[in-house]
Each structure stands twice: as C-alpha cells, then as structure tokens.
Amino acid sequence: MNIAVLSDIHGNYEALKACINYALEREITTFLFLGDYLGEFAYPRRTMDYLYQLRENYQCFFIRGNKEDYWLNYRNCGETGWSGYNSITGALWYTYQNITEGDLDFFAGMEISQTFTLGEAESITLCHGSPFSNRQDLLPKEPDTCHILEQSSTRLILCGHTHIQQKIEHLGKAALNPGSVGAPIGVCRKAQFMLLHQNGNTWEEEFLSLDYPVEREIDNLYSAKLDRIAPYWCKSTIRLLQTGTDSHKLFLQKAMELCREERGECIWPDIPEKYCEQAFEFLIEQAEFHYN
Image (tube, rainbow, N blue to C red; front, side, top):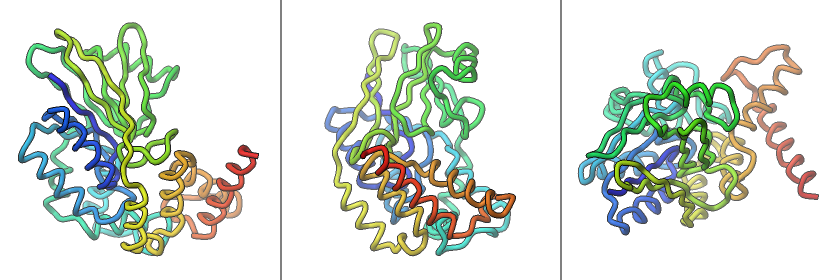
C-alpha cells in the first residue's frame, strides 16, 4: 500500500494538479491532506472543486490548517476587519469572496489532529502544525518538538505548516513534513509532497519535488488582479515561487517590526501599506547583499 501526503497547497492549483497526477500515475489512490488548502493564489474555486472531485473518486482524509481558521473566524466575527486592496488582508479577503458556505462548513468539520490507521500498518498521527495547535512549528532540535515526539502515541507524526520538507527524528520516533505543495521554502519552481510506502507493518517515506508550470500560476495572480488587491503580499508570493526564499512569514514580521518602531505598537491586521512596501524592499536588499 502507498499513500500520498500533501500539505500547504495555498490555492496553487497547478502545483496541486502536478502532485496528484504524479501520484495517480503511480497508482496511488489514498491521499492525506494536512491543511492550508487556500491562501495566496488565484481562483480558489478551482482548487476546492478539484479537492471535492478527489474526495468523490478516491480515499481522502483532511486536516484543518491555520488558514482555514482565518476564514472560519472571519465568518464567526461578522465578516469585519478585512478589506481588499491592501497587502495584509487583501489575499484573505479575495479568497473569502470566492468560497461558499459549503466550503466553510467543510473546513469547520475537519479536526486539527487525528490518528490514521490503514489495514495492518502502524497508526500515524496527522496534524497541520502539531497535534495540539495548527499554528505550532515542529522544527529540528526544538525542545517542544522533542517533547511532542516523546509524548506521541504513534511512531510517526505527519505535519506541515513550516513549508520546509524534512524529517525530524528523536528517540526512535519521527516527524515527517512533506513540504508545501504550493509555496515551498528552500526550493524554487517546484511543488513538494511525500509518499508513504508500506513495508510490513511500518511506513517508509519518499520526499518528492516536482516541476510544474510556475509561470502559468504567476500569470493567474495578475489576471485575478491580486497584484492590486494584495500588492506586496502578491509580490512576496511571486518571489517565493521564483527563489524559494523570503517567506510570507518573514515579510509580515518585518512589516510589523517597522510599524512598531514608528508607531510604538502594531496589532495585526492594522499595518499601513507603507510598512509593507518597506518590508518587501528590505528583504530584496538583504537577498542582494547575501548574494553579492
């Protein structure tokens, strides 16, 4: 038995399609999805309809990521606090305008963690961030990561959220991160995911990085006008696709740092556009400095 594990699609339809086609060509028909289905990319309806099609035709399991919580919380709070045409909430607002109540209910029905068992093979813990929070990073050599692995009832934890493809081992257990389908960090112009191969009653991982039509996905950002709806977030997305560096997290952290320095405090999402522009320019300058 072989299983495909995918995380952090973020609405990158072309990348998702490439991963699924590869898995199907290898006759894999069981899919584990670890959250963050939509995010920065254009035409979220295509991604959602494709996921529903997969669910109808194959065995699929879905975990809720932190992105899904953004839209659920926005609905629950009366749809206030976001707007288009700014870099902080523009992409979130655009996606929310293009999904349905049915999509939101689909997200709400997902768990942030569950134990997965298939046949006689060992059970696996599925989560987005950690088994306890879909916002927590499982990173190498971190005390929290080691503690979570020690406490885990399964030998393997499958997690996403960091967008970094890696295996973290501790005391005979492991956290496996398939990387990001839609916006991986540390690799450019690739879609990343993972296969699990059953070997007796255990699982063995195979990390994959696939080519896909990146420029087509970038063109979609412009055709959907995301360069105007979320200007510097969109620029950051394109840069991440093309270079594998300067994640959205770094961009947001720098924008908030600049905002705090000048205003004394900074509370998301109240971050003026000028700080987004400055943050993006800073990351470009830093990259050029390190390159030279």
